[in-house]
Length: 106
Image 1 (cartoon, helix red, strand yellow):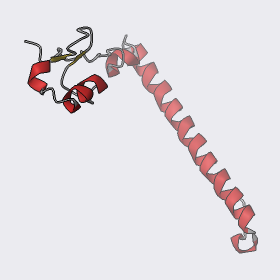
Image 2 (cartoon, rainbow, N blue to C red; image 1 turned 60 degrees about the vertical axis):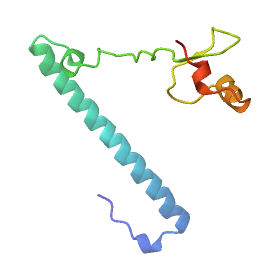
Image 3 (cartoon, rainbow, N blue to C red; image 1 turned 30 degrees about the horizontal axis):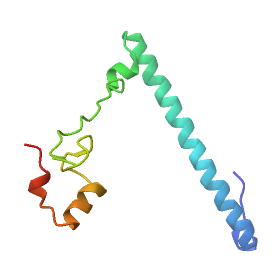
Image 4 (cartoon, rainbow, N blue to C red; image 1 turned 45 degrees about the vertical axis):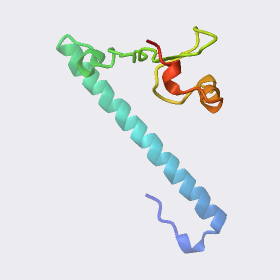
């Protein structure tokens, strides 16, 4: 390994060296992970499985939206479940003095 006299280097040279070291560390870690992944995939294949089957990455769950709780008084296609950010039509109706109970779906 090269022996550097860090005291003799300028600030720009030290910063460049710092970037080079960070990049070297990143690529080293990437290579190590790729090698580990290849070994684990090989073991899984030997046992008759894919890595995705063992880890469970193939199962993707989608979140189902909640049922509508509020409906726009003039446009029934606009609804809101009562979760998350309030839609503008709901905020406008409350500002106009309409109670939230009047907008509920019954």
